[in-house]
Length: 206
Image (cartoon, rainbow, N blue to C red; front, top):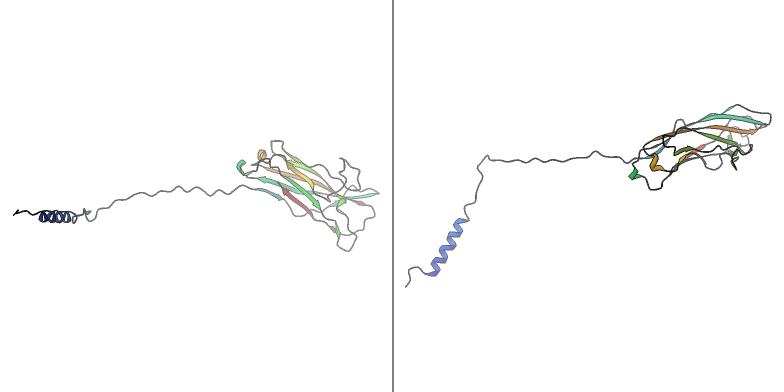
């Protein structure tokens, strides 16, 4: 009979393996290591905007230049500034902006008959158009009591009329452009006396 049976050798191998797995490596007490955590936070970038501002919210007209047939009242539109802080990437291809204006009828405070907006005209004046030459003032619009100074421009500010514009928003971005206008109200000489008020609305479009 063998003194080293096969079952005893196999059992001994299993026992040896079990003993080997019972000895994991352990760090010495007090040992430590560290690592650095970094992050690069970019500043928040607000998108640019195309915006319009007006230097004042009212203008009073005063009589100047009246004749025996026509009374005239004049004033100056408060400075209108168009500012564009957008980048080229933020501007649609082929975009162009414009400021248009139109007025309501002049309503009397004491029940006088209204004066139609066709009696109010303007002559825009570009104060600062930048250096590109691509920002320009609108044409003069005269009143229904006037002979036209340009074909068909004796209509007053009834419909939206051009104050200032550019044909290429991308070329003029990053700038601020200022314009005002001479305002003139022309009425028949027999217009009823009293206070009148009209609302002139300016709108920026692109």
